[in-house]
Length: 196
Length: 294
Image (cartoon, rainbow over all chains, first blue to last red; front, side, top):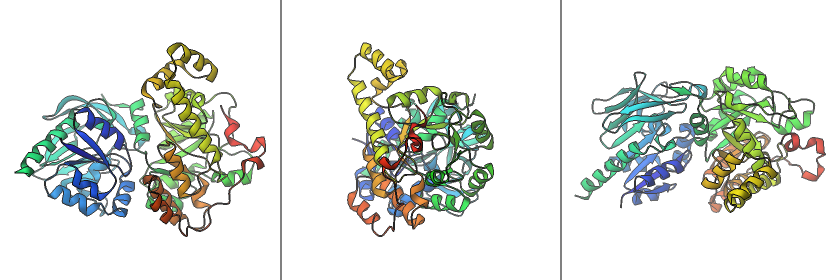
């Protein structure tokens, strides 16, 4: 069975667990680095990126997560998770995991009162996807191997680079599990390749 | 089309704060210490609850200069308090771009009967509650997040524990009731029937419920998480302690790993003196902030 870990240091990790379970895969909350050995793919949830980063440092997760990704295991970052995956953050020298070739802008749509929900088409994944944006970042630019999956108001809000997937919004806050399902399929594919 | 201020967007914002610590701050310097320590948000105030108690008189919304100063200092969300029923204070805070408003009994109520009709605002609100009746009334008025009232500014956890246990226990009780019994329960608790039916079905509140009011140590934060809190507010506890930086970091870690007792033991070593704290029986009825609203 495919097991998806959800980084459970802070944020909406229980909602991701629920969403993963709805696709039929097994979900575990990851609070310790040793747990990375027990999972096939990792979701980095929404929350406060500065808080999650501090806890990642405190519990020495940074290098183990990078290695987990470099070994070919898929990683999916949503909102704060997207910021953590990015190789470049606008106005900041402090890149976190830096494994995905995207440049992001934090709180790009404004403060909480500007937070919104809107229907999006996610290329190859879902049409009319109800996307919830909360103090969300967007992607300002992508590398040549990164595929843009969705835009809102001209800004990139979902992208994939090989086995890395990222979005600005919160797929875990609705009952639409199509994007999570897409990630679970990525993990199943990677698992077959890694088994060879 | 994009929609702002929906329930999903407002409640979702609180979901992102789960497992985190929200800290009271009174200036930019404290806000930066809080952010650096890993706080998920800060509450910008003119005085922390312990000082509001000491000062006496009428406590109002903070000077907007302080709120602005804090908003400019950090990138994490900034909350601010409005008096219960004070529609204008809330609108002013919303216009300033505050990320969350606490309609709070820590300030002197502007209205002794009615709360703000919060569902008309784009900005989300958090409110205090002691039981399921208060919780459901606040949700129906439009609160997107709840917290226990506890007894603010006392450094005494006893009331927050009682309020968290009460809400949890009432939810468990509700699950065992038949539909006709829920109607009587709604009447007895002054709770909206349809919302009770929803909670009975789901087995939980439709919004997150944080602990607040009297959390003074890492062990207090852990205790509240074990009792089912989604996160914690720390008011006077941090900046009334001897070593705020260390204290703030310890409370954040104790909240994340609330069931790791060895770690909490380590975190609690040499923290210096926690805030002094007050025994509930020494408070006069007028000094009990939790009784200021129902």
